[in-house]
Image 1 (cartoon, rainbow, N blue to C red):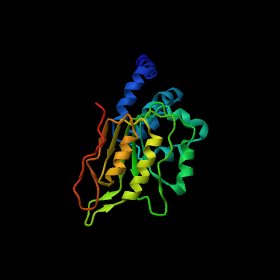
Image 2: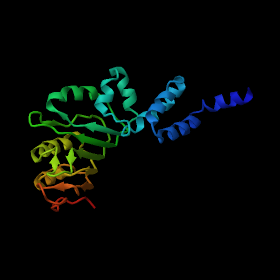
Image 3: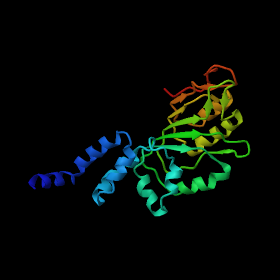
Image 4: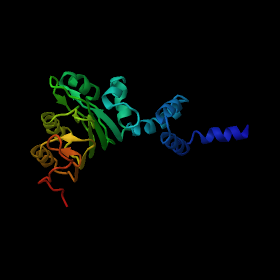
Length: 227
């Protein structure tokens, strides 16, 4: 009985629970397990939520889809915990719905974001969802690309121009930007993009091409990172 009491007391200490939840977060199916931990009692819920929401990149959910299913009154509670997250590029036809899910939210800890880019489609111009009050300094963009013959680029040059024109407006303080897969982007578009980000230190365009059939990184940008 005494042992049970000691264990119960230990499991009510924030320091102990934080160690447990951090360990759970690093395991397979961690989001499901952490969500289960949050159902034990109110205290466990309060302690597990920061770990559950800290890194959403392994949850297979994007920010708009997550917050769309949460009542507006509770959204800010969860937004306060997020440090890393994913976002899917929207089309103009769904822009209002996507932006509504994030409207009015502050993300005080969000510093790293990955944007997934499916095939935008000629009849639905790409739209970068609006995120306000964030601290994002690192952005990765992962376009749809298939290494087949002939190669398939899900995002065309003119669509990249639209996307890269919007990003500095939404994420003006970027220090690092990286293309995660093969992309067709004109040199002038990249140079204009980099020139609009005064804090940019790293621009990884090693997978960028200027036209079909070229090897990656076919040119050197005039843009130079700050020393």
